[in-house]
Image 1 (cartoon, rainbow, N blue to C red):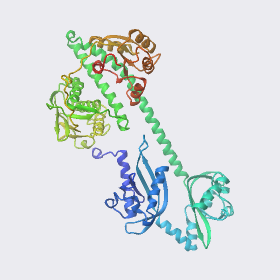
Image 2: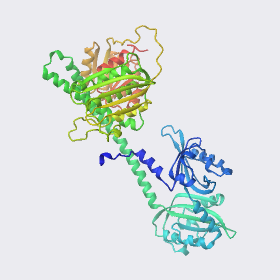
Image 3: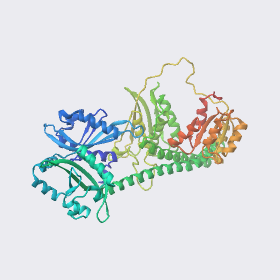
Image 4: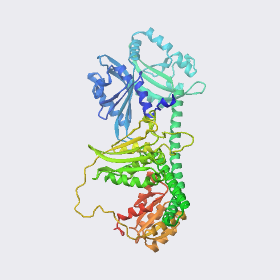
Length: 638
């Protein structure tokens, strides 16, 4: 039974709640005031179906002679973020109804751009009719007055003094009914002092109606009470009276404060979680980088290693890659789900992305002895996309296929253009996907096998990252599987971009080569610095190392390198300070600066940019990635 239940995410649960509320009308409007959503409660209150009202202006719900008030209400909400109102509206059948509501402006979190409005109201026509009936019938008024479950005070509108109090009011504050008589509101604890009380009463006299949603007062015994205060003026037998309705909201306010405190605590927890993950990433990436470079150095001795040494090196290389992949996914999902990713799009050929992704996943495919077939189109398929993020998509899909395909299994990667879409498919003959899991395969932390042996490993994050990144590119991702042991096929569809104008420069697309550079590698982890230095020296570069900020500055001034690969977490001066000082050095201000760090958050990338780094690379940094980056740049920048 449990496998048949689909967990509701927060957004879906919220929409279900709104759509099923029947006693409150809840609807949304675009910035121009046209209705764009309509819940069951609104349909019950006004009589319009969703199909009849969507696209209609908000003023459609106002009496014809008051339609201009709709724009005024939206204007107040836009100016003050919210506007409350109690007014007459019109049903579909033309009858009038009295509603109390709140209109709230919806704004985009970061820029504050107005996205629309949400209106929450309830039908108080019956209450309004009772109020009118009270004016006409003292007997009916008295019956309601005596039995009301809210506190009610009646004031002489000319003096502001209490002339009547209902039993519930006496019970609420602990006074005898007679003790209210002849007093002003401030004398029974309402409002802060006499000045505030009389200012509120002047407002009531001017407007005929006032409302205070959270008003503190104290009982006769000194117990604090928080109330909602509503007052209006009307005539009784030719004399103006002020009626004050007072509702005890102490418990409600306490729950609201608890909810706010819990929300703040959750936000703080999320912040500390992000900080912890960033620190965890840094602390794990530093040793991973050193191990990665050690394995790379061993790989350059392949002709001299025996079978056991080759096996040990392959195992270490694969497991380092697995750990780095898990770290990337763990940090990436936080950025994606909170909308902190910004795509850096450019025109690119999807074939190159697939080839680089295959290079990344190749060690895992070889280790599991998978039979891989690749079918790429003979001509480029151009996309307007972020190459780094799109490569991550392909890597994650291939990694997933390799993870759930048995040793010796088959995996096929194909790319083709279908109409205006580039379609990438990854098919395998692996474990397949159970029917009940298919709808949730892209959900966060979903995995096909949750058994204790954890044979496939992973965090259940990769496919969620794939879906979010593909959607950010305006594409879709799908999955098909006939069932367990029937294999699976993942398909990624992305919009095709126009082909670039043909170039007349011969050899323009040739892979650039890197001449010998003078490189300074700076890292306080000696194994990391020396390992990367040895690998770069093996490619013909002249490389020196330093292990703290002051030494890095001194070595750079003496050595005058073409490029500096610089860790940011250094003793003495951190890497950001070293970068800033290098940018102010007359002979080094144009040196190529590469940030090499275990911190990979967007804020870390921005810090590196602000400090003067040219590029931010997350450990373990592949020496080939450094060389590829240098290949496209002049050795001595202007």
